[in-house]
Length: 210
Image (tube, rainbow, N blue to C red):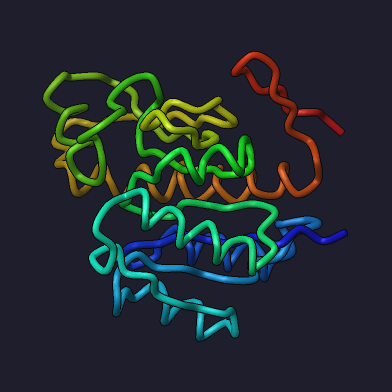
């Protein structure tokens, strides 16, 4: 059975585009992006989905009084869409356990650092790269992990290191981490999931080799 992949977005959708491109190259095996949901009206990511004939909808976070009611609405829609895997691709809303408990080890996120460095509440977007440069680390990267009710706290699936260079700005570093890590390991992790090649035991994952 081909698995249904639902992608959650909030903005421009560059990681979504990486997933769509990988899918069109045949790199996502046994899975298909069937729906894209944005937490904001007018997110450019929705246009990307429509260009590739993927169902796209907005469920704006601002229309719901709290994170629990928003999570309940999303849960309802994910069930309607028969989601097998939910992928955060620049999705900026932390969801309640009412949803994450329903999809244990079936939701994944890409974070622009090597967890457990520079992660958790407040570490998103350019903030992550600003902190990495401030700290003076020589290597950063990206992590794909399963989502649970702890921000950036779920089991780690894949990581890829990226070198920090002299003269890097947060913007330059952000672009390098996307191109050299995020856009490579996110589609790979999605494909591994769809091929049933990720096993989770006691918060640790094992990727089953061919």
